[in-house]
View 1 (cartoon, rainbow, N blue to C red):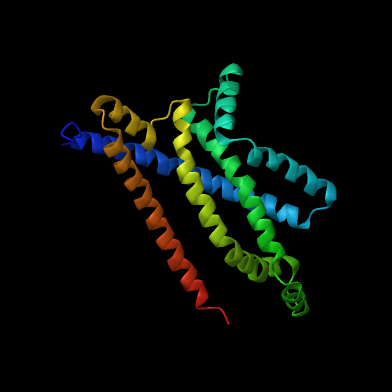
View 2: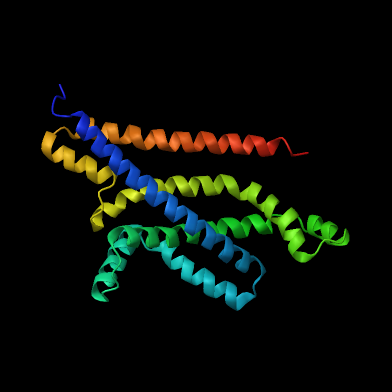
Length: 217
């Protein structure tokens, strides 16, 4: 029935899937690093710094990601910055990710009971030793499930980069649909690929959470 869909078409979709995964990895890595820095600053900073960082990040949380991609891509062309679409996508997705990770890290740090911190300091641990051995591990345990959800969201949002010319999984599917005229079948295959990657990542995350649970009292 779907004779026009060849093995080469499937390989083409897998190549697009690889681009989607690559975008997700780079974006989540840098976005998480920025989010940890901003989240820590927001958890200890005064009102003005907290308000400034929060207001800037609110822009990236509030403006639709597609608009951000198109505007930054256009700005790069106007200013002749020399960034290619892949780099622009990584930049926008990383900042977008950091906006959400910041609040996740901040809430995780603030969720650590103050008694734990005081007890650590009373045992002679320095401020940074307390952060390393007590505060951050506990905050990580609290923030991890939300971070997993953010990562899965970024993976699905990579489909939006097709609007600035990147051939990721959805764009490669659209190209094949144009030739085969079989949208239901092609999009089903694309959906299965998205699900497979997301499911594997979720299962690995669940395994990590269960490992942490062994050390809980």
